[in-house]
Length: 239
Image 1 (cartoon, helix red, strand yellow):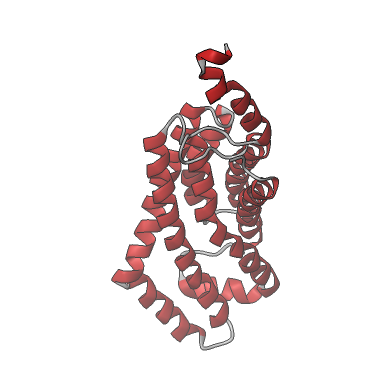
Image 2 (cartoon, rainbow, N blue to C red; image 1 turned 180 degrees about the horizontal axis):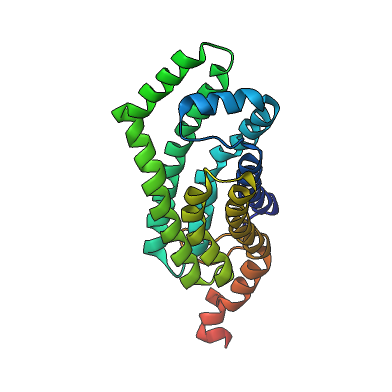
């Protein structure tokens, strides 16, 4: 079956919205030090920007689906790496979404006793369970994007320079997270460009089927049907 036009549009929208949300969230988040009290003060001083950043960050719930779509694109020619990257991407993205609670709590702390709220956030960071989420999000995300980037590079499902951007994104994202909003947004723009390339590939060629690993755009499906011999073609009596 071919990938319906609606399905291709939804997949492309998911990929693009994920990247746009990451860039906007990074550009709008106020800069603060590693201290929780400083973070609360910064959030309180820029409440409008924080509201906008947290709203944009809602697109993070689409990240797991976006990485799964990228894995599907790469699966025909790099099935193992694509599968590893896809599963790691889903798991790490779920963990990263849980980490967003910390920013929501920081925002809420601006209207409460800030010293006690800072102590609460520190206790949250020191929690072993929260540490598991951090480990899955950071290490899992690095591994997922590395696997997906290499898989896309090998499969040539998207331009190789775009696949390289996907590999470079997470290290630069972590390195710039405490720098200026402009640098942080620039690092996240790499994700937007890479996912945008995946979106364009889906719009042009559809998604590979799980059964055959072949692209499933309407034009490619029609061509495949024309190239596939029928029972009549194979019958010697009709030759």
